Image (tube, rainbow, N blue to C red):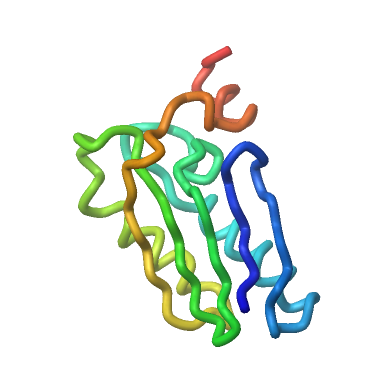
Length: 125
């Protein structure tokens, strides 16, 4: 069983099915999101979480974390470094086990995925 945090239509839709205690799952979820918010695309002054580049975060019973993410474009110059930056940020959270980052292109990213915070920073109203 796993605990899933999805960043699709809702910014953080959480389903709890984990063997981990709920308070630990909640702590890990909050700290993982905070860690993701420290990762910025070098060309965009907004973090990858608020940009909507994180599609899914799955916290497993063994505390391993799987992250499904995308980039703004397949030609993104940061394609080689952003997944590693995400892996390192999530791995820095106390109590997190092995982190796997999967880069996907479907569904394609669009500006509709950005939060209001990212829109404000980028002046995209």
